[in-house]
Image 1: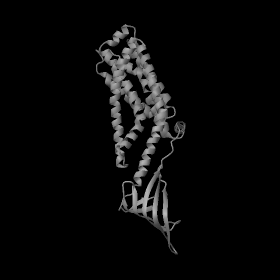
Image 2 (image 1 turned 120 degrees about the horizontal axis):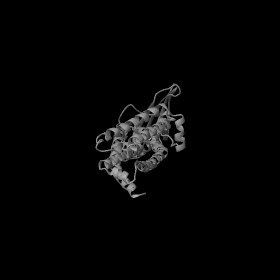
Image 3 (image 1 turned 90 degrees about the vertical axis):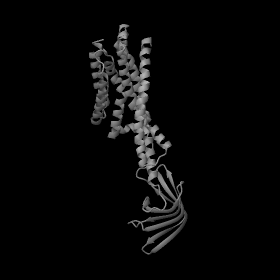
Image 4 (image 1 turned 120 degrees about the vertical axis):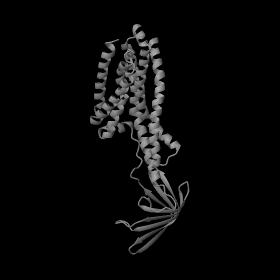
Amino acid sequence: MNRVSRYLLKHFSELFSALFFILFFITSVIFFIKLTAMTAIIKMDFFELGTLYIYLLPRTLVYTLPLTFFIALCITLFNLSKENETIVLFTLGYNPKKIAKLFLTLSSLLSFVLILDIFIFIPISKQLNTNFIEYKKVEAKFNIKANEFGQKFSDWLVYIEHSDNNKLYTGVTLYQIKTDKEDEKLIVATNADIENEKGILRLNLDQGKIFEFAKDGIQQTDFERMHINSQPKTAVGAIQSIKEYWNGVYTDTKRAYDLSFFLLIALFPVVSTLIALSIGVVTYRYNKGSIYLEMFATIALYFVFTTLVSTWFAQIAPVIVFVVTFLLSYIIYQKRIRAVF
């Protein structure tokens, strides 16, 4: 790598680092606000919120890194044009083709890293995130409180006299109404506790009696310890392998859309490199304020195009969008850069 390349990368890396920190912070705040909204339904402490935030990091990077790369490259080249340094570089023989080759190599490496993130880390983190939330929902759903009526555990109405912070209960009464298959039942127990094993809850009762109200009379059964299991509708699922997870794109339209959309966001650095050169390398006397409009218009159009095509043709959207946008960026680059400089 020659001195000019190092000079360009130095300016680019400084701006990239600053912009990445800003965009990452903004994106993190948005995701964190969404997470804190869950505390209205699920009780979580700060450590658990931090755990969920870590699960969201792979997706956060997919959004922030491509945008940071594009914006940093546009502004870096524009600042060099503003100081007439690009003209000096061209005069010394470092033409736009060499600049394009340098940053296309860099953008390709970035896109490769993001694609690895999409195929490896996102499936794992998304499943862990979903399972963690379902686990907390189950835990919240069976948060039985003392001296309150109308609480349920599975098909049983539950009333308890006292509970502590460790979910140990005393003075427990359970009632099950009569059904077509079972008679009316009443259970009283001295003590009880709840275990949560991977989303399957078990109510453990100690020192109690079971009263079954049948047509021919009342039957009483004493017990020292009894277990009542409950299988929630939203049980915590098993973690699929990466291959199993992405094989779902053939049957699950939502997963197919996610893969298509994430891939196109990951490929945005490659697609947008020539556009960034076309926007950033200018004659400053005639192009003072249009850079920001063109920059954000490019981002908006790409995201809209990506969203629409991924929705309509999820299976082939990455190929369509990548080819079309790269050809358009090459045409714009030829007209605005190669034909002028």
